[in-house]
Amino acid sequence: MPDEPFDTDPGIDADLAALLAEPALWEPVDAALEDAVVAAISAESAPAGVVVPITRSRPRLVAAAAAVVLVVLAVGAVLSIRETSAPAGIELALEPTELAPTATGLVSIDDTPLGTRLVLSVSGLPPAANDQYYEAWLRTGPEAGVSAGTFHLRGGDGEIELWAGVTAEDYPLFTITIQDEADPESSGRVVLRGRVAE
Image 1: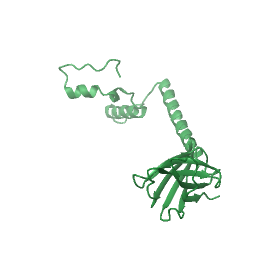
Image 2: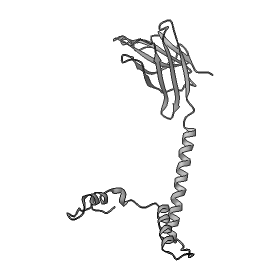
Image 3: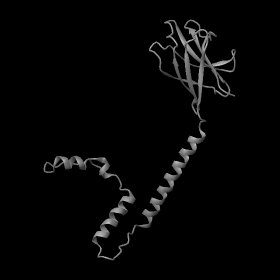
Image 4: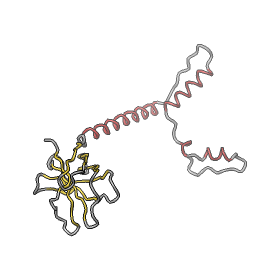
């Protein structure tokens, strides 16, 4: 694109001026498109039966080939990262306890390079009282666990995104407890639970 913005002349049609001011108009032309245009022009202008070769300078051919190689390598790298960065997700159905017998839930667990991402969907679990909240946990058992976040459901059911700094492989038990705001320690009052298959 020119260094200076397109200077509109009062004599130039406004639509043409707007078109010429578009940045995309000044971007480099794709080599394949350039070849196709040259070939079409050559075919139209050459006498019947005469083949007009398309020539291109060697430096431009080398640059085009290098660009293609770089694109192929970049795509391969992205696919490789996608395949190795995180295992396939786990879907875990949650069972209710006597504290919330009508509740059901499903949690999707994905180990990512940033941590363990959990997407929780629940139904039948009542909203927490104003002085209470729900807390999700990844645990090895009743005595050892790591919080994956808190929520209250006062706006109704829906998907809840949670994160944990430990993996479901090391902490395979998933629980949701009802907590009192005055006590940050786990209450042990489990409303939903599930275990990742070993």
